[in-house]
Length: 500
Length: 92
Image (cartoon, rainbow over the protein chains, first blue to last red):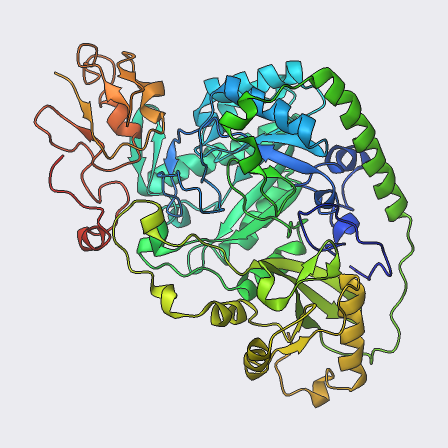
């Protein structure tokens, strides 16, 4: 697939969220989909890379209960300092959730999607989950509804899902082999019993696959999430990808395992390694031959609010929404205007013809670059970047690969009130840690950079570059790539480095 | 004869939904079991449902204070590790 740069595009993102402008693969990643499905996802930030720059989503935490245990999850979910799935600040009743959704929708008209994603399993909380959907579809018919699930109770609720016009479902499928599953899921609750090990995993897998098929048979869009767990399901996920595609899932989102000891999860405590960014990328690339892959996922909280990459949940706490006076009828009119404007802009953008790249010696190898960006331009000071956007430049063009956060995790268990644990990372300076985050990259683009990080980056084999401040990211990445390529250093004969 | 919920409870609601006797109610700092209603599921199920779905070790005890899900029984984390991380208790 050719993935060229959109040249000289105006900074696209407005007011936060993802800081890249094009996220590279945007329109093409879903190119294989029939028109009616593309129409369904064009304003869905979690499904369309293109849409996530413009449209926002929110999750309401009405579903605390779960019916399985995953080794990457700790059911003690209440930690406000972390951003990861399964974590929320306050649980809501369905009534509170409705109030919150209406307040957010009025305040953030770009918010098009309401999801229920936990902090437990939404379908293990059918009463609270479906009551929320029912009230919302009656009061805010302009909001799309989504649900995510581990799949165990999915077959039982497919009809209910269809009844509430929920046309997007995410199933987390980490395996299709019970022996692999037993290493990920210690137990499930099934037919009034706790079932451990391989038998539990077998039932879970069976229900997931059955539920997936039932949903796609009814024309409901299914995205599959998988957690990449090195040494447990890494190779296996290629098979998962093939199978879920064959059953009609339209998008596969392979996410890296998050496993820190201070999270108190099985994997965290047992020191199960997390995948490196390279491992994740290799696996996503390997699966991409069979399946549309999602690369812009931020592994958000079960109560996230706003554009992907920003969280405005603090503006909509229960005490704050309590005093907000929302006229939703009026809000809906405003929302429609905003949505139409965005869709019009997206349509216009799709018409832009992309230029070919010249002056790059044939056979030049690809180069990974990290960008401290904001709103689509190289804008951040190296030391201020909360995340780096990783791009791959090659003779085919520039493609967005992933986000790498510089401060991913909370400070440790003392902030969660869970006992005394020594933070082993504390001895490593933030700068060293950030440089480690950039592993595999050969260039880092930023607006400015200090003397100390400059030296350390060079020592780590990463060339700092502050010459493209305020330029559109893709243009800057291509310009730097052309400079390097022009020296001939990227040709196999001249290259001492292992090709990426 | 009734089960009890301990301080380990994380208020996840899982037990509330599966109790056949509506014996579990929300309270602060955690859910509680009405001992007038709890039958330990005798006559309804082969195992007490709250303890069968509860994801938290040490959160449910019987009248003698014995954990229905002792440390390590649900996660498989070895006792030494649980002790190291302050996640182990001998009794409720």
